[in-house]
Image (cartoon, rainbow, N blue to C red):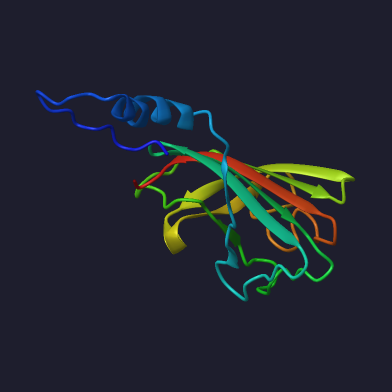
Length: 171
């Protein structure tokens, strides 16, 4: 809920309702529940992936122009990675459009291969497509830098991709 503070004028009568709206409610929004969103999922090149019976969910908290967010992709038996020869460079939508010109690389990404293997990486933000994060950089020596349908592993039902980050929104 956090919005631009009210501009008070000389001689204005301050009521309990105004104080509640401008101070109490704004303050409480810092501690409120996170909002849900459904991230978009697409490929920078090639054919877009399809979710099928998998799940893709996200939550976020926006305070002023600062957005904290989390996302989880759980691969289903009918989820398809898209095409592009393993180089489709997946992109996932953000909950609010990012400010132009920022390059913070504070997206943390974790992939779980059916709970058996765990890979961690980082990603970068882009202002394309209304705001996305993309180019997941792996800590795996053979991953060549970009996570996609084949790296850090070939995804199967039950595999999970988590991501979280913080960025400045355009408004």
